[in-house]
Image (tube, rainbow, N blue to C red; front, side):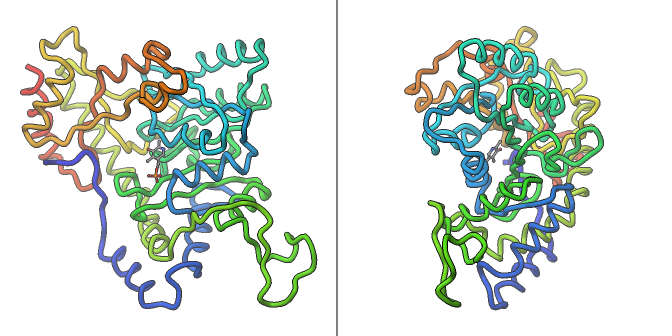
Length: 385
Ligand SMILES: *Cc1c(COP(=O)(O)O)cnc(C)c1O
């Protein structure tokens, strides 16, 4: 089976991890801060806080922005459940904004309409979470302008999009948001096995996230409520978690970071090749906005079902039977059983549901060869006709 995504691990990556294993610190050593500084510099943000997953990073991001009971967070339905679960962890409520069918990202037009309705009802969200679906930035400038005009905070879920650019600048510089979150799960663009990170330009948010990452405990006298008792002393000044990243993870992430641009360039080459190979098939290929440079975490095609005799499910099953690890990103969150218990139902977000009925993620990762792509497209042709 050719998987839909796969990590690319070099000898240098392995050496970096082994070096940490032989060093004094497996956790809370020098490599995590080095990874944070290198990544912040790379994407053009002032601060970076590394944690054990993007899920944790999202939780810290919304917590540090003060999300709590009675508050509301909006994201789009076509994303991983972590994008909205972060609100539920804080006791807040969730709602969704439907997608733009070309980019599968939060639609700015739908967002504008929803803001107007929400303002009239006095039910504005505290935070919105635009997702960089498949590695492509949403229209971040338009979204930021709208959200800021209503005093709403923005957390970008850029789990798919490290190394991507918008208007020529790296995603993660937070010029259109308060905080940006990345994931380093092995299927993503660069990996630390498990891992995530939040960037921000706000020193207070950075400090708050760093505090919450490790139990809400500080050794910094300037953050304490009274004078330190002595060299052993620390204070718990907030209720935090253990979301720390290990030194091995940071070493792997740091080593992978040096190949970030190479990985993204390779993914773009392969995506372009898919574009040519798929041209005569009844599928819609990804549309990339002219101001976006996608990291191409995923290559999602949409079946033109009116031109195909088989069903979406049949095409999918035939691909899997023939060794193509096709996947589907994502099941609209509002249709998940847990979310149904919160009051959502079918028909709430029709464009997301239509997307779900047509979408297939086909394999894309740096180690994929062009020969494999040709083979994959032939398998798709066979599966469709
Ligand atoms: C992968 C992913 C996450 C969660 O990442 P983890 O590092 O596995 O916690 C969150 N949001 C999106 C959009 C993702 O793709």
